[in-house]
Image (tube, rainbow over all chains, first blue to last red; front, side, top):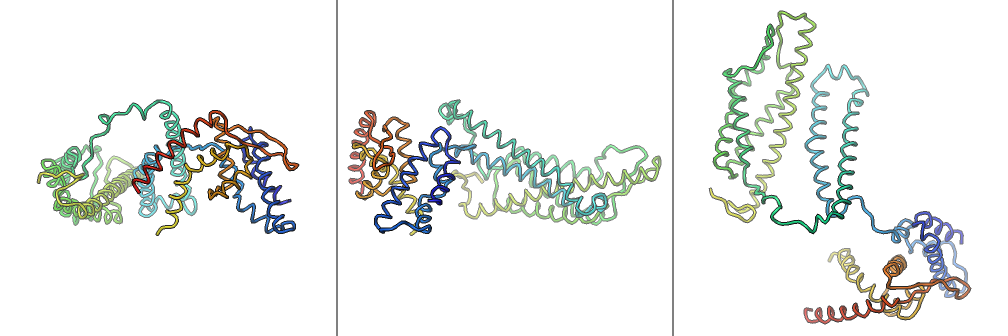
Length: 331
Length: 107
């Protein structure tokens, strides 16, 4: 009976302490009764393999003990979808962009690689890991707390359909988004054509690298196209296949431009008559770093826009023309 | 046909019926092993891992009472319906018959 004793000991370890002995006595009696019945049938003692087969039929000690425990969970089925959504958002909007920026530094900033040679480069990801663990911990703890509070607060009984968010129409273009694109694009165009000047540091001249002149018109045209489309979208705030396709094309072009520009640093040169050479070089490095970060952020934003555009285009193929959420749209 | 799906639906269907079967079988006092055999003999197979936690749950809900007693030189825990259990069983049987007759009509 060595196997049986080992089995019972393993189950006992995991049982709730208040019922440990009681459950174990009953379980032991049941298994012994079963063994005796089988032995009577066979007319001999069971061998180890037969005993093992019986115990395996009863189940793993953790499963057996688990059946006696009350059902417990940290985050229940009601809040779990929201919890997963929040974690996905943290991943998509914070942790992955962070990683992309880090990769950009590793790939395109030689000084960054020089400052962190070999494995110390991986060490620069330490903050990322710690942030990821903290965020995961805080979100989980927050939801676990909400799970306990909501169950007791009567939240699920006192709800009203009137308090639910307004139904979201995936074909609707938020005006705020279009106006934001319009204003942002216009400011950029004015700056690009030199009608708007940014404040400058006295004695310091920032000269764009020669590569910008070859990209002057492509960048201007892409941003202008985006401004025109944002203008149309402001007054006709719903997606049509044509405008959705145009938006996707403009975003894709923008992303391609930004990705190419990424590989072509340094982007500006500095002439500073009133600064020592070393300080001027440091300033140039910082400004180029700012351009790199700006390009990285732009690449992430455009990447997300392209992803959303592709999803919108695919969705429009499977949705009847002019229909979203079962409601027809004016054209 | 998806056999896993069928198996999961079958178990779901049986789960509620098992409670009724266990309560009904415990109109007469029995211990776990004989109860399981009695149910199996009548076509209501129930796994050991399901039966014992179920008996404890029904007891903690006040539907069963239990007592340890020696039989065949071994201590066994005998279960039987409590007075509350008898009332609940009566109501559950009425409910079961109503569901059964509705289902018969539908099917």
